[in-house]
Image 1 (cartoon, rainbow, N blue to C red):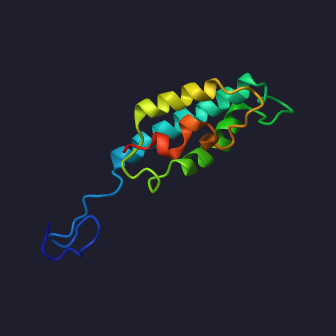
Image 2: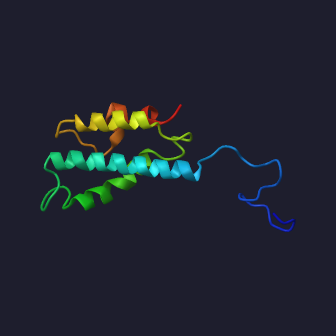
Image 3: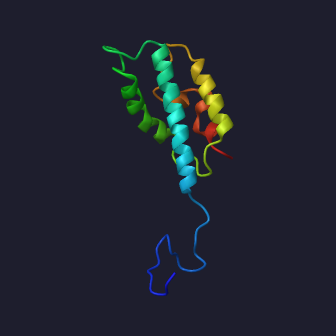
Length: 122
């Protein structure tokens, strides 16, 4: 780096670079988890006959679109600064599959295995 470049997050003052925070690789991994959890929510909705014309979700795509943001909000980098543990995600998805149709998955943390504390790496 040249001597005339301004100090930014990408070019910090020497000795001040932060080693904490969310990496791009972590963000990509977390997005894959969000997709998996969103799809599990929509699998549940579909198996409970909530997807289709005149139902809670008019289509599978609308279910996914409608649930992705809330899933991402449940699992954000602030809540899970070290990332999300993959084995815990599998347990969460298994638990979602076992939920009876009367149980709403509008908030995944309503399922014990899907609480943020259960999904975040320690």
